[in-house]
Length: 353
Image (cartoon, rainbow, N blue to C red; front, side, top):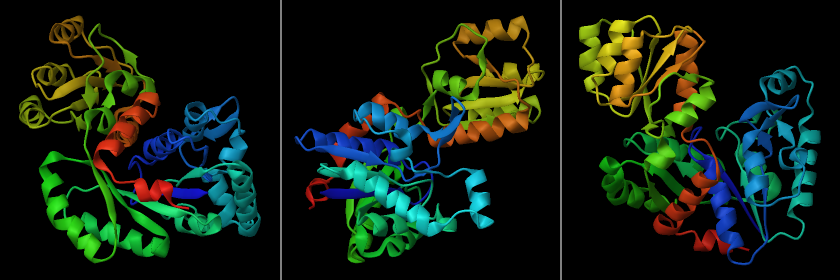
């Protein structure tokens, strides 16, 4: 059986989509596959229980009949972490639980995808970091990394050293066109000279790097106040906390952004609607803009979202949503399968016994 743990140098590197895409690609070879995420970190409340959304998606897309407590034996919530710090959790018992769940899920499987939790170090309070889990489950490790500038190589080297001999290779994800050639010509040979294999470089795509306005509104719980298309993607946020003249100069330098500003700042609303890089406005405080602003937004095809929370809270939540990228779903995984097929060499990883 092949067991691969997918971890990352930081949060939101695309681990879920990659783990599920790998499992699906393996299943196309007429091999049985399984999935597990030992530490649930992407949490939300479901029918009175706090669960991780990623195993839910895995169960659906991979047709798994396992229960959620098997796919996700540890709910790594703030309450759990605080309890572990206070000595209320026994690391040895948790290790045994994870191992038992894994053995049950892996029975009869040819391939097991193990998704890491949060960052490489998540789980340290109970000695269950991703490298610890790899040792516990005798797994190879696929390290997913981003790349924007040469300094990011430090993180890759540190992570590779922490994983050690279990490292199967590095997969760079969401790499922008402007740095792709430098990564391929300079960084890859450097890493391979350090005996760190690079298994692929996946280019940045809007479908995976950004989040649609419709998905953003749903995640934020915001009302859509305009009759304007919501299929455009946003990749960053801009904050309208300055005067109108300074705001216009700032907005003209940004692109694919959501503007977060108070619902009572009509001067900023009007200026933002003149900037092509602002794809939607998110107005805070429960204020509804004037009919003139709403009419202008609809005329220009720019959605306006209304958030009940204050500006600071909305900014913090927006950063989480935009940084995480597109909501994980079947389309996300299908697109990742295409990218892996076209831009990565995973033959040895998937076929390893």
